[in-house]
Length: 115
Length: 112
Image (cartoon, rainbow over all chains, first blue to last red; front, top):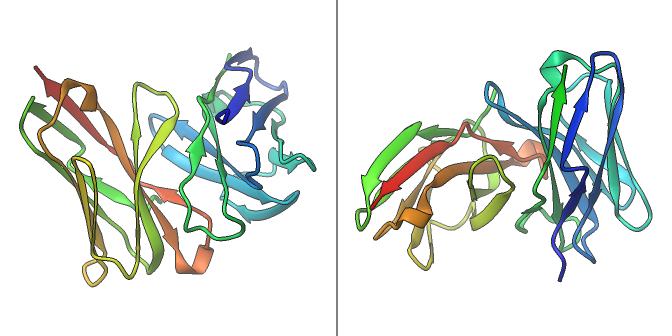
Protein backbone atom coordinates (compact mmCIF):
# COMPACT_ATOMS: atom_id res chain seq x y z
CA UNK A 1 0.00 0.00 0.00
CA UNK A 2 1.41 3.39 -0.96
CA UNK A 3 1.97 5.80 1.92
CA UNK A 4 0.81 9.37 2.33
CA UNK A 5 2.27 11.60 -0.35
CA UNK A 6 2.66 15.35 -0.24
CA UNK A 7 3.53 17.72 -3.03
CA UNK A 8 5.56 19.71 -3.47
CA UNK A 9 8.29 18.71 -1.02
CA UNK A 10 9.92 22.13 -1.01
CA UNK A 11 8.54 25.54 -1.80
CA UNK A 12 9.92 29.06 -1.68
CA UNK A 13 7.52 31.97 -1.79
CA UNK A 14 7.63 35.67 -1.01
CA UNK A 15 5.51 37.62 1.44
CA UNK A 16 2.04 38.38 0.21
CA UNK A 17 1.84 35.46 -2.18
CA UNK A 18 -0.43 32.49 -1.73
CA UNK A 19 0.40 28.80 -1.79
CA UNK A 20 -1.46 25.53 -2.24
CA UNK A 21 -0.14 22.28 -0.80
CA UNK A 22 -1.46 18.87 -1.73
CA UNK A 23 -1.84 15.64 0.19
CA UNK A 24 -2.85 12.21 -1.07
CA UNK A 25 -3.86 9.90 1.79
CA UNK A 26 -3.45 6.16 1.97
CA UNK A 27 -5.99 4.43 -0.21
CA UNK A 28 -9.21 3.88 1.74
CA UNK A 29 -8.48 6.51 4.39
CA UNK A 30 -11.14 9.19 4.61
CA UNK A 31 -9.64 11.37 7.34
CA UNK A 32 -6.91 13.84 6.47
CA UNK A 33 -5.37 16.20 9.02
CA UNK A 34 -2.92 19.02 8.50
CA UNK A 35 -0.26 20.20 10.93
CA UNK A 36 2.23 23.03 10.97
CA UNK A 37 5.62 22.37 12.55
CA UNK A 38 7.99 25.17 13.51
CA UNK A 39 10.96 25.23 15.90
CA UNK A 40 9.22 27.78 18.10
CA UNK A 41 5.66 26.48 18.25
CA UNK A 42 6.23 22.80 17.60
CA UNK A 43 3.51 20.74 15.95
CA UNK A 44 0.20 22.54 15.75
CA UNK A 45 -3.06 21.15 14.46
CA UNK A 46 -4.51 23.09 11.54
CA UNK A 47 -7.63 21.18 10.55
CA UNK A 48 -9.07 17.77 9.79
CA UNK A 49 -11.25 16.75 6.89
CA UNK A 50 -13.42 13.67 6.81
CA UNK A 51 -15.50 12.70 3.79
CA UNK A 52 -15.07 16.17 2.23
CA UNK A 53 -16.20 17.99 5.38
CA UNK A 54 -14.07 19.93 7.81
CA UNK A 55 -14.55 18.12 11.09
CA UNK A 56 -12.04 19.89 13.32
CA UNK A 57 -10.21 23.18 13.19
CA UNK A 58 -7.22 24.52 15.08
CA UNK A 59 -6.48 28.07 16.13
CA UNK A 60 -5.14 29.50 12.92
CA UNK A 61 -6.25 32.66 11.11
CA UNK A 62 -8.61 32.52 8.16
CA UNK A 63 -5.67 32.81 5.77
CA UNK A 64 -5.26 29.08 6.29
CA UNK A 65 -7.92 27.06 4.54
CA UNK A 66 -8.34 23.60 3.17
CA UNK A 67 -10.60 21.29 1.30
CA UNK A 68 -11.00 17.63 0.56
CA UNK A 69 -12.09 16.03 -2.66
CA UNK A 70 -14.30 13.02 -3.24
CA UNK A 71 -11.23 10.80 -3.66
CA UNK A 72 -10.06 11.95 -0.18
CA UNK A 73 -7.15 13.94 -1.55
CA UNK A 74 -6.78 17.19 0.32
CA UNK A 75 -5.36 20.60 -0.37
CA UNK A 76 -4.29 23.30 2.00
CA UNK A 77 -4.12 26.94 0.98
CA UNK A 78 -2.37 29.80 2.69
CA UNK A 79 -3.11 33.27 1.38
CA UNK A 80 -1.17 36.49 1.94
CA UNK A 81 1.91 34.68 3.16
CA UNK A 82 3.85 36.03 6.12
CA UNK A 83 7.42 35.31 7.18
CA UNK A 84 6.06 33.40 10.17
CA UNK A 85 4.34 30.92 7.87
CA UNK A 86 7.71 29.37 7.09
CA UNK A 87 7.36 25.84 8.41
CA UNK A 88 7.14 22.17 7.68
CA UNK A 89 3.54 21.35 6.81
CA UNK A 90 2.60 17.78 7.55
CA UNK A 91 -0.40 15.88 6.38
CA UNK A 92 -1.67 12.76 8.12
CA UNK A 93 -4.31 10.26 7.07
CA UNK A 94 -6.27 7.95 9.27
CA UNK A 95 -8.52 5.04 8.50
CA UNK A 96 -11.13 3.16 10.44
CA UNK A 97 -14.04 5.52 9.93
CA UNK A 98 -14.80 8.42 12.23
CA UNK A 99 -13.09 6.97 15.28
CA UNK A 100 -9.94 8.60 16.61
CA UNK A 101 -8.77 5.24 17.93
CA UNK A 102 -6.55 4.72 14.94
CA UNK A 103 -2.99 5.70 14.24
CA UNK A 104 -2.23 8.59 11.96
CA UNK A 105 0.06 7.97 9.01
CA UNK A 106 2.13 11.01 8.19
CA UNK A 107 3.50 12.17 4.88
CA UNK A 108 7.07 13.46 4.48
CA UNK A 109 5.89 17.06 4.67
CA UNK A 110 6.21 20.18 2.55
CA UNK A 111 8.94 22.57 3.61
CA UNK A 112 7.66 26.10 2.95
CA UNK A 113 10.05 29.03 3.11
CA UNK A 114 8.65 32.54 2.92
CA UNK A 115 11.11 35.27 1.98
CA UNK B 1 -0.73 26.22 24.34
CA UNK B 2 0.37 22.66 23.82
CA UNK B 3 -1.36 20.42 26.29
CA UNK B 4 0.91 17.41 25.88
CA UNK B 5 4.19 18.38 27.47
CA UNK B 6 7.18 16.05 27.26
CA UNK B 7 9.93 15.77 29.80
CA UNK B 8 12.89 15.88 29.45
CA UNK B 9 13.37 18.14 26.44
CA UNK B 10 16.55 16.28 25.53
CA UNK B 11 18.16 13.01 26.48
CA UNK B 12 21.60 11.67 25.65
CA UNK B 13 22.38 8.02 26.33
CA UNK B 14 24.69 5.26 25.16
CA UNK B 15 23.70 2.24 23.16
CA UNK B 16 22.27 -0.49 25.32
CA UNK B 17 20.89 1.87 27.94
CA UNK B 18 17.20 2.51 28.52
CA UNK B 19 15.55 5.81 27.67
CA UNK B 20 12.49 7.09 29.50
CA UNK B 21 10.45 10.13 28.59
CA UNK B 22 7.27 11.48 30.08
CA UNK B 23 4.22 13.27 28.79
CA UNK B 24 1.77 15.26 30.88
CA UNK B 25 -1.56 16.68 29.82
CA UNK B 26 -4.32 18.76 31.36
CA UNK B 27 -7.78 17.47 30.43
CA UNK B 28 -9.46 14.11 29.97
CA UNK B 29 -8.40 12.13 26.93
CA UNK B 30 -9.82 9.49 24.61
CA UNK B 31 -6.40 8.14 23.81
CA UNK B 32 -2.74 9.08 23.77
CA UNK B 33 -0.29 8.25 21.00
CA UNK B 34 3.49 8.32 20.76
CA UNK B 35 5.31 9.21 17.57
CA UNK B 36 8.92 9.34 16.42
CA UNK B 37 10.40 11.87 14.01
CA UNK B 38 13.80 11.66 12.39
CA UNK B 39 15.51 14.94 11.42
CA UNK B 40 12.48 17.06 10.46
CA UNK B 41 10.85 14.35 8.39
CA UNK B 42 7.41 12.83 8.71
CA UNK B 43 6.28 11.28 11.96
CA UNK B 44 6.05 7.55 12.51
CA UNK B 45 3.40 6.15 14.82
CA UNK B 46 4.78 4.03 17.68
CA UNK B 47 2.00 3.14 20.10
CA UNK B 48 -1.59 4.15 20.86
CA UNK B 49 -2.91 3.69 24.39
CA UNK B 50 -6.58 4.16 25.21
CA UNK B 51 -7.78 5.96 28.30
CA UNK B 52 -8.94 2.69 29.89
CA UNK B 53 -5.56 1.01 29.40
CA UNK B 54 -2.61 1.26 31.76
CA UNK B 55 0.26 -0.30 29.86
CA UNK B 56 1.13 -1.41 26.33
CA UNK B 57 4.17 -3.01 24.79
CA UNK B 58 5.55 -3.09 21.28
CA UNK B 59 8.94 -4.69 20.80
CA UNK B 60 11.43 -2.65 22.83
CA UNK B 61 8.83 0.01 23.62
CA UNK B 62 6.70 0.19 26.73
CA UNK B 63 4.08 2.85 27.30
CA UNK B 64 2.25 3.47 30.54
CA UNK B 65 -0.71 5.73 31.19
CA UNK B 66 -1.83 7.14 34.53
CA UNK B 67 -5.08 9.03 33.99
CA UNK B 68 -5.27 10.07 37.65
CA UNK B 69 -1.97 11.93 37.24
CA UNK B 70 -2.70 12.83 33.61
CA UNK B 71 0.62 11.50 32.50
CA UNK B 72 2.17 8.88 30.26
CA UNK B 73 5.67 7.52 29.88
CA UNK B 74 7.53 5.93 27.00
CA UNK B 75 10.37 3.54 27.77
CA UNK B 76 12.79 2.41 25.08
CA UNK B 77 14.83 -0.54 26.28
CA UNK B 78 18.29 -1.54 25.02
CA UNK B 79 18.55 1.57 22.88
CA UNK B 80 20.32 1.62 19.53
CA UNK B 81 21.89 4.42 17.50
CA UNK B 82 18.92 4.12 15.13
CA UNK B 83 16.64 5.23 17.99
CA UNK B 84 18.14 8.72 17.72
CA UNK B 85 15.12 10.89 16.96
CA UNK B 86 12.56 13.23 18.48
CA UNK B 87 9.68 11.60 20.30
CA UNK B 88 6.27 13.22 20.62
CA UNK B 89 3.15 12.38 22.52
CA UNK B 90 -0.18 13.31 20.97
CA UNK B 91 -3.37 13.53 22.96
CA UNK B 92 -6.91 13.23 21.73
CA UNK B 93 -9.09 15.09 24.20
CA UNK B 94 -12.65 14.15 25.06
CA UNK B 95 -13.96 17.63 24.33
CA UNK B 96 -12.19 17.90 20.95
CA UNK B 97 -12.31 14.38 19.60
CA UNK B 98 -9.96 13.87 16.65
CA UNK B 99 -8.16 17.18 17.22
CA UNK B 100 -4.76 15.83 18.26
CA UNK B 101 -2.50 18.01 20.36
CA UNK B 102 1.22 17.34 20.20
CA UNK B 103 3.78 18.09 22.85
CA UNK B 104 7.08 19.84 22.23
CA UNK B 105 8.91 16.54 22.01
CA UNK B 106 11.90 14.89 23.60
CA UNK B 107 15.08 14.83 21.53
CA UNK B 108 16.90 11.55 22.11
CA UNK B 109 20.52 11.00 21.05
CA UNK B 110 21.94 7.51 21.32
CA UNK B 111 25.69 7.30 20.95
CA UNK B 112 27.53 4.07 20.02
